[in-house]
Image (cartoon, rainbow, N blue to C red):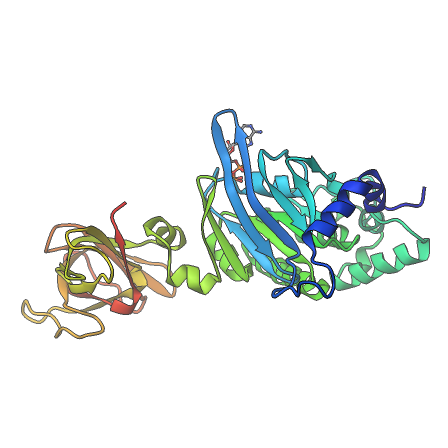
Length: 392
Ligand SMILES: Nc1ncnc2c1ncn2[C@@H]1O[C@H](COP(=O)(O)OP(=O)(O)OP(=O)(O)O)[C@@H](O)[C@H]1O
């Protein structure tokens, strides 16, 4: 009686935990850690379903106050990874540490309520028979006055004080989401695990709730691991993106770096439409209809894909069958004929059939320009925005 869930869990796993804490945190004065201990440290985590490896040696760290997004297509293993960290899915290999303390490995597992992790899903599942105050207070223990103060503080921070006595069915989706966030944060979890938490909200509301959630999580210093399949959401939310495919993390980095230096063609294509032209490397260069592209370190004779995003294609008018002059920054122009042009607001997407091989390439241009099908135009490609990948 009187013990919090975490304290109860600790008392159930006393010796093992103490041993682990000793073995993973260096003693004072003996070894000086060079980097701070990650709030969440996942090492070589694996999970199989029958013969299928759903999660394959996934490793990642999240520091206090940091948001890491686990991003990838449907079925790549994101939710399974999150569920293992939360303790609601068994592991088949690896280990999970919270604040340097092992909470799960093949030798044993601290139950979910003892891991200092909070969990938020898309269907936030507030208790329908409890009002907002009691929903937020649900996971809290301790003196009543402290519980009341914590609930009031959180409702204030999520802007729901005036709804304290309302029931979930009396709230909008965004309001329910705010209450769910307050409830998840109430016990001050060290790590917040979020699985597509905003996907039930409409676009406009989603942006607001997302930003408010982020501010609150940062203010509380919580480490956040957020699962999403939407690149735009990951880029907006994340300090770091861990890009996942077929159960593995294929790239980790700041959103800017992942977008501008993708690890491979699939990583580039996950964030936007891409154009791909092919070439063969000779003397660290690849000759194409757009001129030469650098391919440093790629052996002679290697077939490569040259990848560029539609917004990095520049288009220019046809002057009696001639295009603009080649430049160092944009190479040689190649001619194409407009197949389709679509107005999408601030931009137009124009599709060209290229003279050199009949392939289709796309350009995104300011929407003041909406060329008619059949119009010949010249395309140039920004060299500093191209990626060259050996064909896989
Ligand atoms: N309990 C289970 N039994 C069998 N296979 C499972 C189970 N849970 C997940 N899988 C499989 O493991 C793979 C990864 O699933 P997971 O739900 O982690 O993917 P995800 O990336 O989160 O996908 P989504 O974005 O669609 O939720 C999938 O092929 C899925 O079918």
